[in-house]
Length: 378
Ligand SMILES: Cc1cc2nc3c(=O)[nH]c(=O)nc-3n(C[C@H](O)[C@H](O)[C@H](O)COP(=O)(O)OP(=O)(O)OC[C@H]3O[C@@H](n4cnc5c(N)ncnc54)[C@H](O)[C@@H]3O)c2cc1C
Picture 1 (cartoon, rainbow, N blue to C red):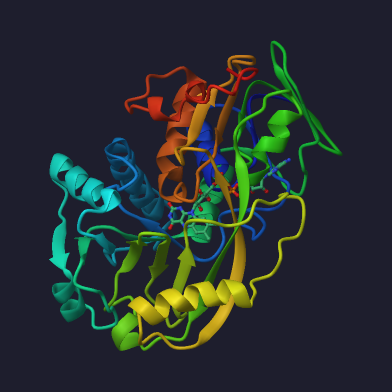
Picture 2 (cartoon, rainbow, N blue to C red; picture 1 turned 180 degrees about the vertical axis):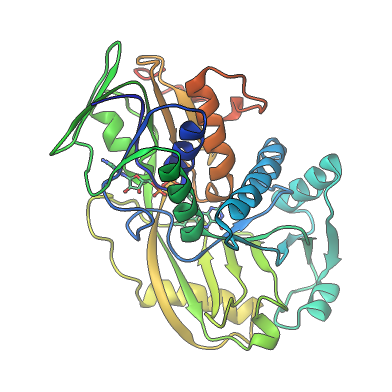
């Protein structure tokens, strides 16, 4: 079967790319090892934070703003609520570089942002306890994306626009040349171009075509806790990111009574993505409990914990680039635990790259050439 483009991995990023490519009139074949949205990759757990004043670097701000606009367009197309404007607080020491970058990027892009003392934070949100040395940068326009609903919505629209889907078909082999051939257990597909957006499995898929990338799949955990809705419900409480000296935590208010949700962003054990992950355990819970005891003392007991996968790059910036050894392959991976909010705009950018259209955004930060050790792929 021959297509204009094959997408290997139709998860967060691949599904958005499928929509934009189908919208651009391309014949597109989307292959996934499971049936997205599913719980085996990086896009489950109900919620993802979207914030615009961006601690990871000012270069992300235009992308985050475009992403928000595209999520809004998608919500209107499928007539679903995909975004909740709860606001997001970024919390840390007053001189924390992440918090300073949040403040600077808000200033540069004229984004609404309130910088609050620890006292002001505790007065506004009595569910939080903060020591004197900490401040918060509160962005009221940001909030929460409903992650599985977003993936489902792009799937619905891509199917309506004629994209072909092959689910529960892991890709076994990729053969590069003038065109790209992709082989599963039951099909052989060819296309002029191919997008590899296979999340935690990208490293091993690329190794099979002799392209070693510095990607590390990591086991991550998150959990829901009982919560007083007056203190921690989404009408009263924002999403949050805490940049502590030795750890980073993020979390969400209780939505529709589901419970307060929290996860730790840094750390996590390297994994083989093909192996079943160890379930959420006491050690995972203990780590989250320590944070809750210190900073959210009125949160109730643990309800349920889950496991998930991050795909880290060494500098925690994404990879969105063509392989120089096979220019008809685009890699979109290494989203390092902060990629979901951008899935919409990255889908649009991938479509522009495939169609040969000019990209309005500066994506030099995501080039493969920054990794000196990537000798074969660049
Ligand atoms: C617990 C948790 C919390 C997070 N919180 C946030 C947040 O608040 N805000 C934010 O912006 N981001 C957040 N992220 C990060 C974000 O969710 C990820 O960066 C993003 O989902 C990665 O998208 P992806 O398309 O690379 O991976 P995925 O969505 O996992 O998609 C990859 C797809 O490839 C498929 N695949 C793999 N191998 C093959 C193969 N051989 N053949 C066919 N298909 C294959 C998989 O089945 C999967 O569907 C969080 C992530 C986790 C795990």
